[in-house]
Length: 421
Ligand code: GLA
Image 1 (cartoon, rainbow, N blue to C red):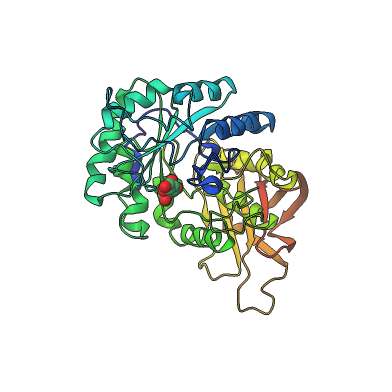
Image 2: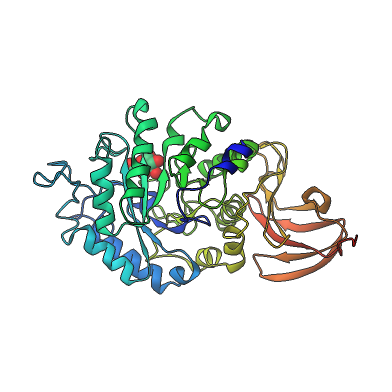
């Protein structure tokens, strides 16, 4: 696998680090009832509000540049413009059209993400792109799209040719468009060792969704973490600059509106669970695509998202995906680590707890032995959450009282002088 993936380069110079931004699907889903819910329905008003908040909240400056439309933007009847044959947005909800919406995002310093599918219709039953790749890619390029999420939800037999065709069409479109392929989420069950990642890269996919959709609750989030941990060995060699595995959206700061597996009005997960997601997504070099409502976000969640040191781990230029080092998802304390460009190692010490344990819901001390991440001698330990250096330690370090479902998030710097030869 290493040789294969190393031998093909990404389609172009896009997504050299995992993409960062915001996407509507997590909270807003397919809310198209603008009469009843004008502030939250899938339409240009809501997206403009998110773009404004992205900029005003300091997210654009921090690197979260994408505003991504997801499903349900399309007009259903007729599915394509009768004159041009193009996909077209619902005229009531997007009265100014998508070119104007893209321009609005660009004027705010944001990039424009759009959604389609390699099937006759999207997962929500809206018109999609199969057999229309060239025309659709050209249309998206004219609208100023910078990132295209391409879902499945159609006949599996089409994906092999369809995703390849869309990759070629995007390449020929004359615009740099990051290509996100959902293909892996729809083939080979959940066994990552069977996925033809080299083929995805050759077809031009800059990232791809693996595994299940995230929902607004801890079971869903922790299940995704377990899956990534279990398949680290198969996933790591295929990730790198220009081609990433996508663990799905961040729940950080997300308050359910009752459509997404959460309880309306409640946070999807606790603050400590939000920290765990940030740490493990950054270590896993997964895109950081927020699934919250940027117009209403709590300060404590915002601080997690804007933590510069956490972002630095995610965006580390070496682009080497990290993984779980603990052998099993049933380990109640887990070590996750990622090697960084300057020789540092980012580490999450995750207190998963165990359902049956008497101490399942308590905080716990977690020790890292430096040799387990290939660091020796005196090691400088930096706490990413408090953004402060803790000190120098030899052999090991113990993070005290890591909260239940929370994670210590550390950056370790080896200080042992290299041997001279
Ligand atoms: C699939 C995708 C989701 C979302 C929906 C839209 O389930 O995995 O991320 O795009 O379709 O219908």
